[in-house]
Image: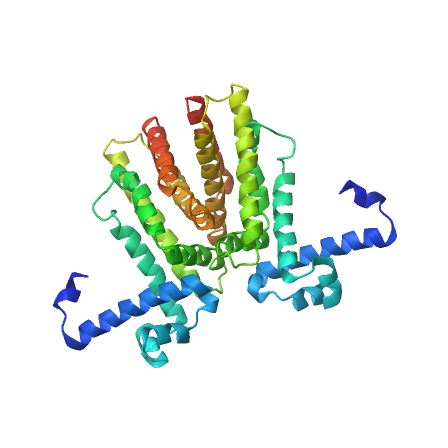
Length: 204
Length: 204
């Protein structure tokens, strides 16, 4: 977002307006759900017209995608952008906990991921792509750890299974945190990661 | 359900009708979601009146609860009713895979669990209770394994964390299976359980 600071006039206003709409959409979808949160409610809260909002996002589905991308971006910025290999996995508990700080986004993402498994859902393609990207990113970091000799060799199938398990644990803990905010997300995730890295070191 | 065989007349008809409505509700909620699946659609497919359906379940929320209870009952009957202690955990991958066989129920349950985190959701109390029961059941089996000397001693906090992790993995894998039916639920769950039991044996 460094370019925002140097942008001028209408362009900068457009970026700010877009960010503002996404922020409000996060709140509204978080409160009322995707089905219940209307474009009109979001436009009213931002103080723009329905037409202006659609000009930025094309449709309600486009806005949903922007909101879910914002969720991923925030999780990534929460300390994952400067680590690789095993350190990436070691940093996941902290990044997950920080992302959980936004209840609206966590609830929206978890609900969408479940609902969007239906091929007719507007967020289906986004969710499929998002999981594929997540698996590919984790697999690349695990492969890097193997190549560096930080963990014992793993086959492609084993790496695939490991990255799916890590993702499952983080998703499942996120769900428990939604249901019970006293859930210790960090402790759960750290226990899993520590134990898993130990198992990888011992030969996968 | 052994009593069904000996029940007579209207009582037996009532039980069968109830089971039939739940089965159709599973289909309809699975296809159209909870919001989209109306009581009228379900009643029409069963071939009963709206009034008859409400007579059995009181409300749409009552029907939803019956459907979610059916999901838990099926998972339990899929091989968990005759095992305890560590064997209960060893059997979980198989039971989870069998439960995943019903896509409609898996999708409904996963979506509901996420949506129902909101205190105003009709299934909120059911989902809270369902997770509390799940954690209590798993904790009792793990405590039994500790008492039998099958795993090293664990504090109450450690047991609480372990049962939440197991639940998170199974929920997360269920979600991945919804998004990608080629997901190997059994292999993922078995890897997790085997590794976890090894870690418990080594001192938690």
